[in-house]
Length: 346
Ligand code: CP3
Image 1: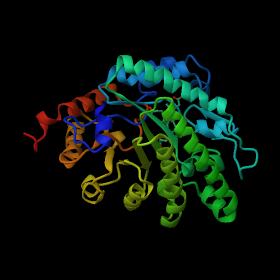
Image 2: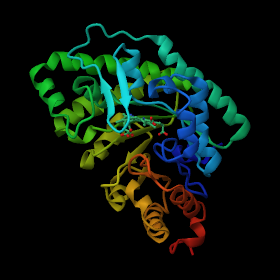
Image 3: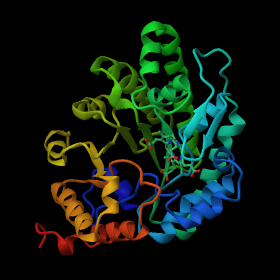
Image 4: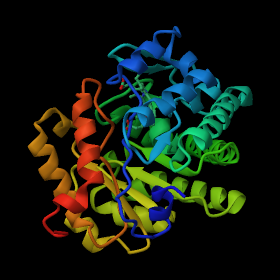
């Protein structure tokens, strides 16, 4: 069994498992080459063979413990009938919505993701039997942000204003997304995903009350639907920027693992996070642009913090496009040789 799944079940494994958010992507020349074979990013995401190859690319290079299916959180709004485009260096552009009228799932689109998972799972069983396959979706709040705003934004003021002036319409959007995301993730598990991750990248911009309403509540419903339909599937939740709300988020949603961004102090997480929830994180993605000794020092600091409890190593957010490949190689080496170099374990 993969050490990441063992860790998510509460076992302290000999090695700390590692995978990296956005581990397949533009910093890899083989990804850029594969990406150039298809005209648009969305067409790439809906091509099961290309998706499967991109998913496995980082496993061929680095000794990572999991692969995440190559896709995007905006595939779901696309499947709901919203036009989504990705332009170079501009981020995504979506047709803006003000309610749920006309939104209807085209299941043929999401089936492309299912078939990509099936193909990838088969390949991994042959080539990487000890590594886990992660499926994912955006959380309703974050996906709604893009659907209402029509693009990325620093604090989604328009979305928050939209909620206060159109409460019912906004609640309807969250509720359709909650239902469809649960169904989508159930299908991902049935197609071979062994771990599920829910990305709530914009969780950090809400008031505590709205955080409960739009981050915790929908995520809790999705986790419940998943577990009642497919059983004990390990689930990672990432409420980026949640700060002190992280503990309530982890407890109330009943996720198994909570991803921590780079702004949080890991000793605080160790002391306050309930023992039955596994922490994951949180090296600053920009630190990979520094020298080897900095990477080593910060990585060991994080590993030392969790030397006595199950923990999954990751960055605090996705790997950046120009990240030097040698930095990732070095990071993985430090983690896999940890017992040898840690002051605590000497
Ligand atoms: O390796 C992996 O982690 C799997 C692939 C993955 C992508 N997007 C590929 C991608 C995952 C898990 C995502 C999630 C995602 N997408 C999130 C949540 C995580 C986070 O970063 O906070 C969000 C907010 C999005 C929305 C999105 N997609 C944005 C804002 C952008 C543009 C920014 C950018 O990096 O260009 C994308 C495009 C995108 N998604 C790319 C990739 C590899 C770049 C497009 C390309 O390579 O042509």
